[in-house]
Length: 166
Figure 1 (spheres, one colour):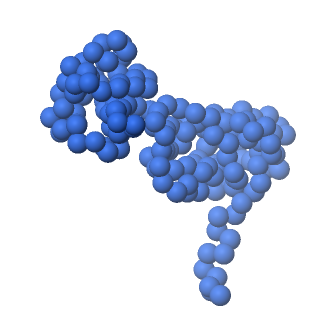
Figure 2 (cartoon, rainbow, N blue to C red):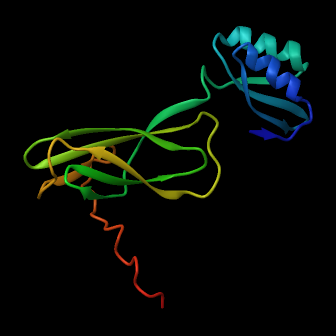
């Protein structure tokens, strides 16, 4: 959470969260304090935040602090028969929430969903593994990413492990 302004105390955060209002950010912008919050019933949320914090700009960015978004995978490998490892670029507090699969005799299609903050995540992207169980071993089937519609490249994550650096 970003707290550029000293307007929000720990007691304010606790009091608002007891009412189902989570403060995600507090920033100074052009002489005004902007408070980003999530909570149900936008009118109620705006009223309670201004009653608690005073004359601030309240941005209600949703009902909850997290959202699911589709994310294309970058590569795959079969870690064990019937267990597909997919690679996703994620950052900050993001994580792969779910991978939906569909398969036939020639193809496996994967569609990954990443859980992320509604106000954006910070930090360097990292290459992250996530696993999906298949109905049967992959064999010679093609793996297609359902977000991009493109075949995924195979990537052996074990390649280079144990080799001398040089």
